[in-house]
Length: 293
Image 1 (cartoon, rainbow, N blue to C red):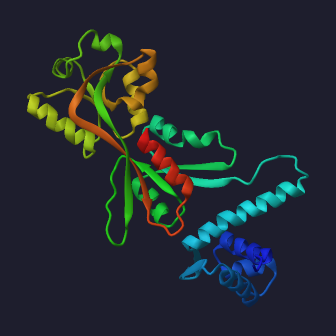
Image 2 (cartoon, rainbow, N blue to C red; image 1 turned 90 degrees about the vertical axis):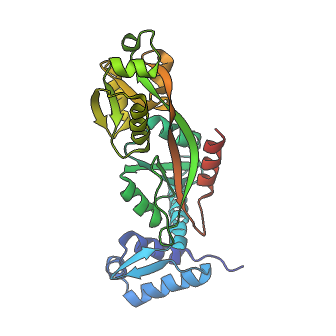
């Protein structure tokens, strides 16, 4: 079997960092044509195209992204060897996870939790808007996106939304505010409420519910961030419409209590991926674990 030429791999790694063949050639003090030959030889050896040109910039293909991950692991292992084994352990595989900035932190922790104790995995967790994260997913800069908003999918953007869990939504509040009352209608008549922003699935369901009940609840705040809703309801001045996972610790400690579940309203948590020729196997295992849980 023909061995991999690590000089070719080093040149590939350098070009991947710059995204520009001319700039890399100047930095390495080699001709652009010689650098192109080295990349082409590596592509021939691997049987895969590693870059695609968009204008003047070079972008990694999916095979290129996989090769870059392995190249970084190989070079990291070499640095460990040169460091006279000051640190032990194998090279760590990167798992790149995007999470909607407004998503429950407790849910995010429960998803990535199985990886945190592993010495062979490095978790890269990035937050952002839905549009930003899906764009990064399409460009293969992320392996999976965690969200509670189902993305649009068509032939040009073939995303795959894996339903991880569906959490019932309840009225949550401080014990002194709820007292012994747990009935939704009575609580909404008596106390102001903190709601998700209009347009979310939970808010749509809540608006329909109060319309059926003939209620006009006093809205204390409209918030698009679950973490902020968690902080606000802990102040004890208003109820909040939340899935219990968001305030799991407060419910366990008794700092907050849960009234009746709001009928027909649930928060769906999703893991979004795209079809890939070389999917990250760790992500598949994470999704299976979260789905079973």
